[in-house]
Image 1: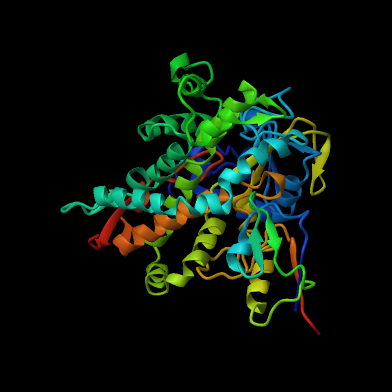
Image 2: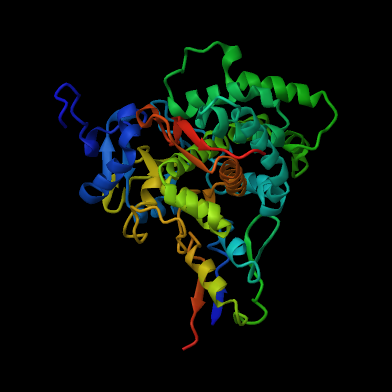
Length: 69
Length: 407
C-alpha cells in the first residue's frame, strides 16, 4: 500500500496526525507532514489501517491511499 | 399538528429566519426537508439571504474565495461594505491575499502542540466546575449555564490574559453579535460595547510590562518592522473573544444533551474509553454548532442557482454534515463512526483556527463529566432551549443526575 498527500489541499484540520501518528506529523502551523515521503509513500507493515483512517477522515480530500494490486 | 391555535409553520424554502426561535427549534428538520425539496433556499429576512443545504454546494462556496467574500460572516441587516480585504475581525473576515498573513500570525498559538499543553489546566477547570455542581441534595443542574458555558470562557480568558470574571460580559457581547445580530445597533451605551471593553484592556496592557499571553504576543508582533494596525489588533482580539466561546459551549452542551438521552452511548463511553476520540468527532458531525456566511463578490451561482453580487449566503456546515450524499447513515449518530470527513470546522482557507482548542475542550468536558456523572437524563425535555442565529447549541439544559461519583 502507498499513501500520497497533497500539501496544497491541506488546511490543517489535523485529523491525519491524530489518527495515524506514525505516518503524519504536524508542522508548527498545524499543517500535515507525511513522514513516509522519503520511502516513496510506501506504508510500513501494520500501518495500513492507520493510513486508511487518515485518508477517510480528511475533510479536504488531501490524502489518497493506493492499494497494491 | 393537532393544536389549531399554533401558528402555521413558515414556508421554509422562502420564509426562513435563522435568528428566530421557530427555526432554532427545528433547524435540523428544516435542512433535511430543504435538501430534498429546495436545496438552495432563499428568504427576504435580513435584507435577503441564501441557504444552501447540500454538502457539495456548501463545500464549493467555502473553497471559492473569488466569488464569495468573507467581508461579512454574520448575516444581518447591516451588511459590511468597503472593509475587504481585512474585514472587521481578521482573519475570519479577510479575503486573499491579506488573509494568509493575518492567519499565519495566529497559527502557532493554536497549533496542536501549543494546545496540547493546555490539557491539564482545562481538566482542572472542568473538575472545579463539577465540584461546585455536585453538592448533596441537588439532583437537577443546568448543564449549559452551570457547566458548558464556563469552560471556553475560562480557557480563552486565560489564553488572552483577560479576567476570567468577565465571562458574563463576553456572553453578552456574543448574544448581541451572534445570536441577535443587528438588533442592538444604536441602542447601547458606549461603555457597554465590545469596542469599549477592548480599548480599555489594550490601553492598560500597553502601559504594563509585556506578558506571555496572546494579547502580549499580538502587541509585540511586528510585520515588516511595523506593529499591527489598531484595526487589525482590535479586530483579531475581538475575534478570539467572540469565536471561541459560544461555539465550543454549544458543542459541549449538545453532546451532553445527546448523552442524556442515550443510555447505550453512555454505557459505551464508560466501558470502552478508546471510543472517546471517535465519539468526539461524531458529536462534532452530528451537532456541528457553526453556520458561517459569505457575501457574493460577483454575480455567480450556487449549484446552478443564480446569486447576485452582494447577496448574503449562509454556509450551514451542520446541514452539510447530515447530507446522505456525503455520509453513510447521515441521519444516525454512530458513536464509533470510522469514516468521518465532517466539516464542523469548515473547509478551505478559513478552516476554524481554534479547532484543536475546541476538540481539547470538548474532549475534556465530556470525559470529566462522564467520570463524575456516569448516569443522567433530561430533567425536563420541553425546557431545553436552543440558541438562535449562526451558532447552534442548547442554552438551557436541565439535567437530572441519576448517579454521581465522588472525586
